[in-house]
Amino acid sequence: MGDEFGGTKPEQDFVLKTIENRDVHFIRCWFADVLGNMKSFAVVPGELENAFAGGMGFDGSSIRGFSAIQDSDILAFPDPGTFQVLPWRPESNAVARMFCDIQKPDGRPFEADSRHIMKRAIRRAADAGFTANIGCEIEFFYFKDAEGAEPLDAGTSFDLTSLDYASDLRRDTVLTLEKMGIPVEYSHHECGPSQHEIDLRYSDALSMADSVMTYKLVVKEIAIKHGVYASFMPKPIEGVPGNGMHVHLSLFDGEGRNAFFDETDGSGYNLSATAKHFVAGILAHAKELCLVTNQYVNSYKRLCGGMNAPSTIAWARHNRSTMVRIPGYRPNSADACRVELRNPDPACNPYLAFSAMLAAGLDGIERELPLCEPMEGHDFFKMSPAEAEALGVDVLPRTLGEALEAFADSALMREVLGDHVHEYLADAKRADWDGYQRTVTPWELERNLAVL
Image (cartoon, rainbow, N blue to C red; front, top):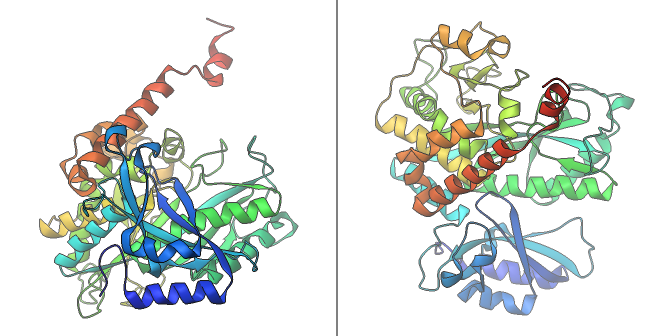
């Protein structure tokens, strides 16, 4: 076993040999800031052994949410288990990447490192006897450029016609992901014009978070290569569905059995008591989670739009308008039993989002929270919040401001993210919301200027 930062020596040796055999001349060291934006610096092969042993120092105060100027020296340790050659770069003088773990000079983990927060959440699950597996369905739009939301086609779900001439882009994206060791289950045209979805096959939680970060970069790189622009903005076009990131999550026990599956479940859902408590925890903390899973003002244009995005804190199997769904494609398969969270969007920081989901579910398990009745047969997409509440169903925050209030007061979110990240996110999102509130929009001018 290697340590938390350096990996194992055989892994490091494999990386060094691959660099020599594949003519790699630059190694990109990747990490995420608190909001989930990819950051990177490059090292040359000759410096890599030193990087494995002692880390690469850099100025943390230059990264939003990391360090104050008076406490800015931090170290990046490349994780050799994440080494991949970048397929979109030339084969000669090749470029590779590794994700990094961030550490303080005294050897302590850096409190703003998203991967460290994710590892801490995984350890909490392990202490409870579980390993978390996650799969993601991630949606995005192709636009002609970054200056506006002009789509490439007028297609809709699963189109395979001349409307879907972005299929070549999807194909190249899928092939690139697979070359980087990221298996893909499905890819298809989504509901909106020029909207697409690529689904990543499930893996352990940390690998999936790394894969989501890689996925978003690959989609954008392949789009640029084809002369177009890819966007993960939650709601870029009014009147059509926005971009979601449906997260499929399951817990396995120490013997490799799916802890969510129980074929003797009297309710007919094949859910174990563990699964029911987990879902109850997600629902109990749903409002607190929202700032992490849906972190932008624009995120709530998708959630309140009534178009394929859930706004109700409820669960079901067949009802896709609830926040949590139990997929029923193979209801009697132990391996396929999982929980699907439908409200997250791909603009989130996946490390923090997965950590928050795990913490909420584990809290439900630890406190043995009872699960409410499923809400089958109701189309919440067509209901107002008042109509949903009349059925006894609470709703997710309708604005970033509401989500901020729930997050700021959440002891669980402070515990899972740590004081530093919790306070930074609250401050950063308060500034976003205050700025949005002060902005006079074209909508207001169009409706009010000539009549008031």
